[in-house]
Image 1 (cartoon, rainbow over the protein chains, first blue to last red):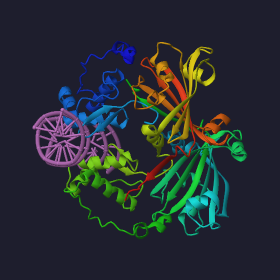
Image 2: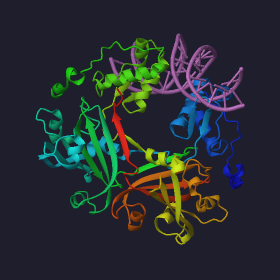
Image 3: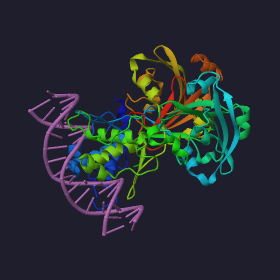
Image 4: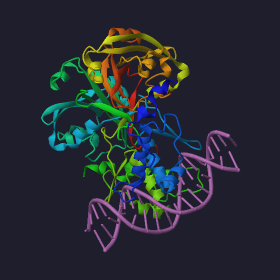
Length: 263
Length: 263
DNA sequence: AAGTGGTCTAGACCACCTA
DNA sequence: AGGTGGTCTAGACCACTTT
C-alpha cells in the first residue's frame, strides 16, 4: 500500500492522545476549541481525506456539548473548506487542491481604508463618444456621449494604481457629479462614501502596462499587471458605471492558503 | 442635499409595505425568508448604507422567531458582506465597493471535477539541477536535483492548461512516484485522490504565454494569461512541491458579484 | 444601566441518505 | 428504520458598547 510511507508515526510526531477536553472556563469559545481539536486530528491524519467525521451528535456527546455547539464547530471547518457536509450522509474530510480556494482583495482594501495615506490625481476628465468596451459594457449605442475619468491613485506618496471610469453623460446624474469630483477619494468605488449603487460585478484579468501606465506607476512597459474591471448597476438595474483598476501584482498580491495551517 | 435624486420614490418603484411575514409552512427555511426580506429592504433603500439594522432581538420579536433564527438570518447577510456585525454596537449595512469581494476558482474546479472529459499529456518528465524560482520556493540549495514534470491538460478534447511541477528528487518519496505517474489526472493537485499534503499556498499572477505555451494552447505568444502558482507542504511543514498552471483568462474567468443580486 | 452581538443549552422536528 | 445533517425554540449568560 502506497500510503505506508505516511503511517501515523511518521505523520504525527506530536501524537494526539485522544484525551482532548473542552475547557469551559477558557476565554476561547467551546466551538473554537472543538474546531481546533478537529483540525489537529485532520492534520495528524486521524481523520483521513475522504473519510467521515464523527457525527455532530456523537461529537456533542463525547465532548459534553450541546448539539448546536458541536454543529458550530464543524461549521468552522466547513467554511474553511476543510470539510464538506452532506445531508443525511455525514461530514467528510476534503482533500486539498488548487480549486478549493478563493482570493480576496485584502491588499486593495487595506490601501483604500488607509485614507490618511491616500492621494488622488485626476489625469483626465472629459466627455467622449462611446466606442469599444465601455460602449458594450454600459449597453449604450455607439457614439453616445460618455463621461471619462482617469485617476492616478497614490499610496504613501508612491503611485499605486490607475483607475479609468466611464459613465453615461447625464448632467442631472449624481454619478457624473461624483465622478467629476476632484476629491474622488471620498467618491465612487470606495466603501467610505454614500453610494447610489446596490450591486456590481467585478472581473479580474491579466494585462500588461502600456507606456503611459508604466511611466505613471514607475514600472516598465510590457510588464504584467492585474486589471480589475468593475461594472456598477443603478436602482433600475441598468449598468451605470464601467471602469477598471490597473495595478501591479507586487502591490496587490493574491495569495490563498488551503488546508490546515493553525495547529 | 445631493441624495435628493435618490429619494425613496425613485429608489423603490416596487415599494415594500413593511407587512412581510414569515411563512412557517413554506419549504423555505424561516431564516432564509428573513434574510431575503432584509436584503430587499437594503436594496430598496429602507436600510441605507452605513445605517444600523434592527437588533437581532427586535427582528426576532417582530417576525415571531427565536433569537437564534433571527441571528442566523443576519448571518447570511454578514457572510455575503452586505452587512457587518459589531459586538455591543449593532449590525451595519455595508457600502459596496471593489475591495469587498473575493474570486473563486470555480471554472477550474468544474473542469477538474469533470473527469470524463479530461485528458493529460506528459510533455516532460526529467530530473534537473535546481535553480531560480523552484529552487527558492522549495528551499533547496542551488544545484540540488529536482524532479520536473510538465503536463498539457486537455478538456473536452481542447487544450486547457499547462502545468509545470517541481519536487525534491527522493526515490523513496511517494510525491515523486505520484508526479511521475502518467495517469497524472488522478494524481497530485486534484481533490479526487489520496493526497499526502495537509496544507498549501496558492498565488495568482498575471503572465503571458511564451511561444511554446501559445502553440500548445492554441493561443498567441505574448497574450495575457493567468499563472496560478502552488506550493504544497508535507507533514513536517517542508515545502515538498512547487509549480504552476498557465491558463488563459477566457478559460478561467474570475468574476465576483457584490451587493444585492437576488431580489 | 440598557442595549447589542456572541455563545450555549437541552430539547424538538424535519429532510435526506443508507442499509 | 436508524443515522445524519438542517432547522428551530425559549430560554440563559457573557462581553462589549453606548448612554
